Length: 593
Image 1 (cartoon, helix red, strand yellow):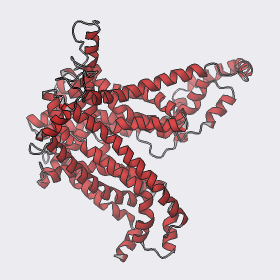
Image 2: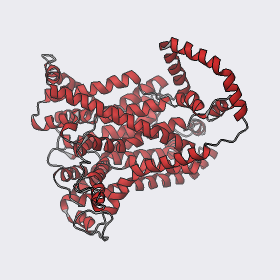
Image 3: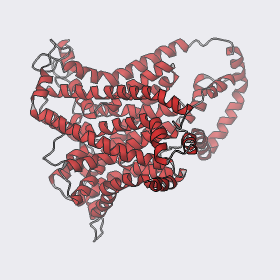
Image 4: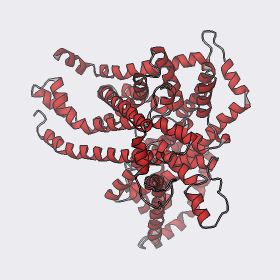
């Protein structure tokens, strides 16, 4: 055993083997086979692709998918950038509170949030009932089953994913640079545009790419909120997969969708290095090289306006800012509106789930637990919940062990190899989920695990491992390796050093990775619907079937329970971090104990 750990110390990359083995068997090899299937291997032809582009309906759905994804990404950026800026500009305690309020909807089930918008926008939803009661309309407005409803639902789900990367990058920007720009006569907007915004471009790029690629694979929200003319390619692929089961055509459509995502990622790329300064400088240089004549004109006009700027700067140098009060008011109103948009739908479902009437109503005419009793009294509901819990726990255990080993091994490798291995292991997260589901279906079909709990666990784990690796790797990035060296210098072996020194310090990251792995598995529906067969029904699948066929008020109670899960998860993570602080301090004093 001692020799084994000594070899691992010299070759940490071996620790990544279990993670890449699962990824290769369930996703890697099947995605290659899927591509060969789309080419009609071994004959090899482009007939399936020609057939796809030969039908105008297919091309229209593809264009529609790109259009909806691009518009949703643009809306998220327009709302998310000022929101992230205001969060970073807030005081420390307020900033942490706002970030927590953004994380809560991010961790909440996407299906539960989609159901919330059905309750709000439906013909008998909150808005139409309110307008009818006020006598402003005589018949319900068509607020649902259209493109606008799709945008509202998609932006609501993806906005936290735009805000969080922006906040991460903006918090690393030195605010003294803005102050230096102001001290040299730049107006507030000029200082922001010339200094702060270029430095925040890595966050803009990362957030926009993540949102766009994930929107490409959206399936549930457009199907639940959109009409027949708002179908996306994922819906088309899933429908073709379930009806015709022509694997070659399904594979071709899946790879066309994947090609769009790959082209966008290769054109813009995800900057994981955090070199914002270089990015900003290269961005400015690229614009100057493309528009040299514009730069000359701008410089000439700047020289003409220099005396006026100097005079204005001298006059305003010692004047108090008159617009700070109004800007604070506008900023506060904006933050409140965005938080209302993110949190009110979930809060509404929770309140309506206690309704005492025969139907959901707001405000409730009376309080009752009837819909919760309906959930716990119906075997089809709690059996589905128990199946989801079982799968989620097993996925959390498997992905946490495998992902932690992989993160530790990747952290100890060379920087270039580290970046490559991280990108490979995150592939199932960055690819459209429908493509991942079809590849997993093909892989589990070869293994004979379709329609089994084991197959679903493996299919969920390929994405959950990526979440664990990201979170544990972030914890290891702040880990001082000199603590391990100090322990080894006091005759502690590799295993003892890991258990007594490394593991206690990275425990919060491991628990955080396990929580994210469980939540990602518990909420999964697209991959589960493809690989689960008809024998296994998880809670999200049961909810989706009921939403499509009947609006059972019991779904409100289920959604409330799903909304409660991320709140409990954040409490667990906070307690874990709080309890780990004293042990971390003791280890800093005496790392060999």
